[in-house]
Image (cartoon, rainbow, N blue to C red):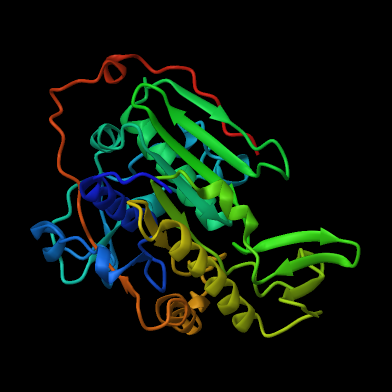
Amino acid sequence: MMRRRPGALWAGALVAVLALLAACTAAAAATITRRQHQRGASAAAAACDAFAAGRWVWDASYPLYDAARCPFIRDEFACARFGRPDTAYLKYRWQPEPPCAQPRFDGLALLRMWGGRTVMFVGDSLALNQYESLLCMLHAAAPGARTTASPASGKIDPSYTVRFEDYNVTLVYYLTHYLVDLVPEKAGRVLKLDAIDQARNWLGADVLVFDSWHWWPRTGPTQPWDLIQEGSTVVRDMDRTRAFTKALHTWAAWVDANLLHTDTKVFFQGISPSHYSSTAALFVCAQGPGLGRVAEEDVHGGDAAAQRHGAVPRRADPAAGHPAERAGRDGQARLPA
């Protein structure tokens, strides 16, 4: 059983961070919580819903970090480092509707607030993008902070860990495309919709941010499984949305059994739009809301609610001055590809 910790404030800060990282998600990131464990939102949160509808607005003070100088971005995502000439796309921030005054992201305040805690992103490349972006935002706020990185060691440990030593804050990315288990067997690679043994690796985190969907529709050479299994029934294929729903039931049951009576904060992200060309439409809009309802309505049945919260972090006193904040830029280990 995980220990309880007071944490409404720092968990609320993560909500604001997730809103920054995933503002354009079609089925806005949902905080999975329970009615009997809800905490009162602050007045600021009540007045400013970070996950509400909104729009992108120009902000000349953006971006929040220089991607070309961030040591945590993988090469395949490091557009600026490899010569992308345009930067206008970095100058936008998400403005909730109705408009409200959200505090500007304060990485130092977040590091101080999260002292002694672990934040884990679990999922596919969407989780990886947000994980690396958050690392870069924190690195930009505390460039002199000492960090240690522990890359994935292989199939047994498919995770990356970066620890901000001066603040005792740990951020983890755990790679899993389906949340449920994908097991190699004699008959082939089996996607087990009712098995989630890998979840034991997620225990101990103070915050868990999950996502899944983009790999579910894949077919052909990019499909990483050969068979689908539920109980004793094994099939070669099935409706992918139905399979996704069954997997989320398994995930939700695990959350209920292992995290319901702890102070661990659990978030499930909605589906991020795919937008590969500047002239392409955001085609996810046609399917996103329905799939979002899978997480919000179907997963937990009638006794749970997917609540959207917009809490904001309390400003830390900048005069406090953590020693690492006064240090010069330190050598940083790059997250390996």
